[in-house]
Length: 194
Image 1 (cartoon, helix red, strand yellow):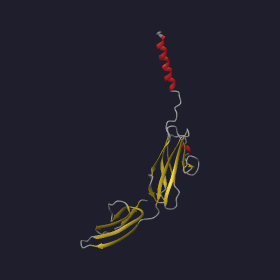
Image 2: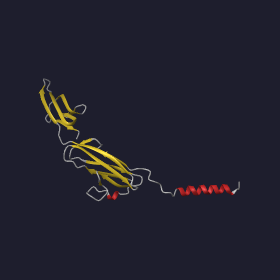
Image 3: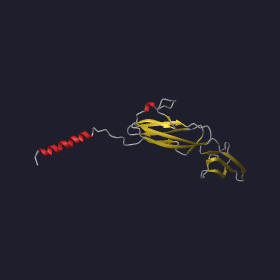
Image 4: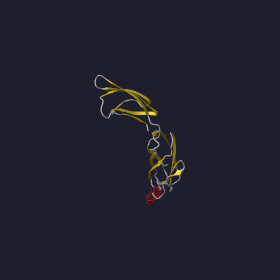
């Protein structure tokens, strides 16, 4: 072998390594989209229908569409037109629903190279307040016994009697009995999933 042959191979490999850094990287990641609040399947009232999340892409986000409407175009007060090309975009939108039922939102995120990711988000709207029936009986010990039935069209989540939380598994109906010391401001509070 000739003595310059190894130098030629070495120089060729150095040139190849240097030029490989100049090559354009291809888009290696489809956009990621995540809803952080409220989680899919959550229950809300008609007054609390703001959905928020993040879109992430290694090349940059150019479009966030919710049911076909683009949040990144210049419409409404929740416009994200200044976020075009950013790699991480925090967004929120208001779901429009006046009555009870399920809202299904299709969120589509597109990156600078045209790759699109889709996420379906479900939200349950509950406009019906829980109901409560109760009876109070005085006991010989100076305490009172409170017996009641709390009901909701979807789920009773918590019950507090005179500030004391009752332990139970959330359900549509919950019957309870508790003995408490009567006070000036005793209340019974029933909270549903919304």
